[in-house]
Figure 1 (cartoon, rainbow, N blue to C red):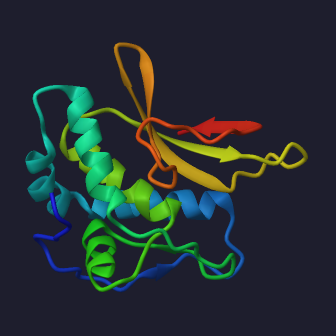
Figure 2: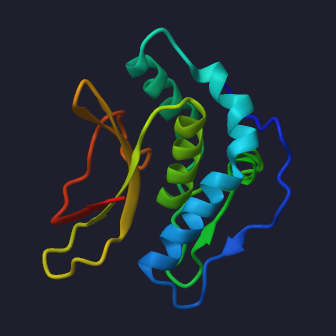
Length: 163
């Protein structure tokens, strides 16, 4: 399915804070997921497939169309699903936070349970620097990380925290 948003964005992009903590980022990601519900409720049924695995692949492939653009450390933002998609249509990419918001809001609308996974790849620092969505099928984790090139592929990490 080609990127489109059924609901025009209502709000501006929210800058998290000048010296944001991981907690600040997670709070605003959760808020953006909640505020994305009306748009996700309209989009998600079009991604539903005959199996849960195919539905997850459809969600991944839809969100994967958003170009990856890393935000500078001092300008971290959270955006709702309509703003993320509208930005991508206009050539503005997103990073792991935006992919997480998009995927989580769609899974929420599809009634598919998920967790947010934060990881650190630094052996000497447990502070997370990456976030993505995980869900399960028959007890097996399915990784929903559009930063990765392929569906159900997880980056290596030294520390992880599931929310």
